[in-house]
Image 1: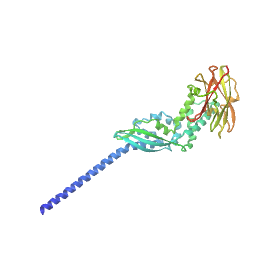
Image 2: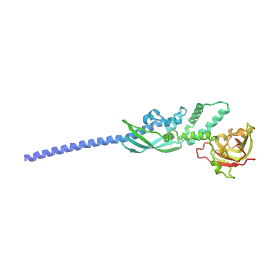
Image 3: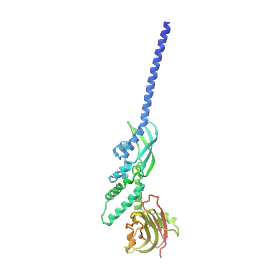
Image 4: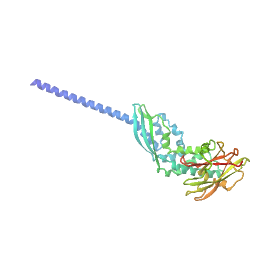
Length: 353
């Protein structure tokens, strides 16, 4: 009897030890699992902190979440320009994001974020129009503006139009490469996709402005290959229409031959508009783009190019180009600053030899 009781006591003690061991193992397993889970969440957390800083353009905090605080892709863009800061801060108030997934590899990870941001493309069209009107007015007043003055003016016009943001949104999915440095996770490199949502596609405005400025120097022969003998430069948009009228040759201030192209410009909008702001007309001869010319004789049609035309009004506009010889000239007409969405028309002009 005593032996049975002793064996029964030993059995209870063994079960207690087993239970204690199992509890300890479970605690250790849970602790280990929690540790792994916490480590797994850290890359996501670091990216979330970066994106939250983006909402308020907190560059200091953004820098702490990027390897070596390398924000060069942002600094090299217009986001770093003081003249545009107020506008871009209002832009990013509308930004939202979701962490969509992550490829976790211990000390490296790729975190995917879907970002919904205010798309300013429509606003920028109005901004460019207003900006160029102000530039024209300043030029005719005889006032000279520095590059800094131009940036401040553009920044002011952007700020005036910031209230229009938030009506149109775009989405972009970005894979952020990340790395664990010490105890912290950082983004190893930023690319232009981040600049795109931070600036609400502002880079497209700069590209459009630059392409317009460079157009007089580089040129293209695409239209020469596309137009036919019956093609016309006639074009109609929501804001204006252009209808070819005539052309002739004349001389510029230096006595050189130039081509004068006449067209009717009708303002179809509700506000005053300028042909110089809305219309881009280029001329090509022998596959080279012709330079703009200043005719020796002034006339009203030439002045109409820079004038503000009242709504529902039609005026005749003249633009002049310096000729190289008397061979055919190909015209290319398009809506200015259409961000790749506008129409382009062409026409071949035969010159009197």
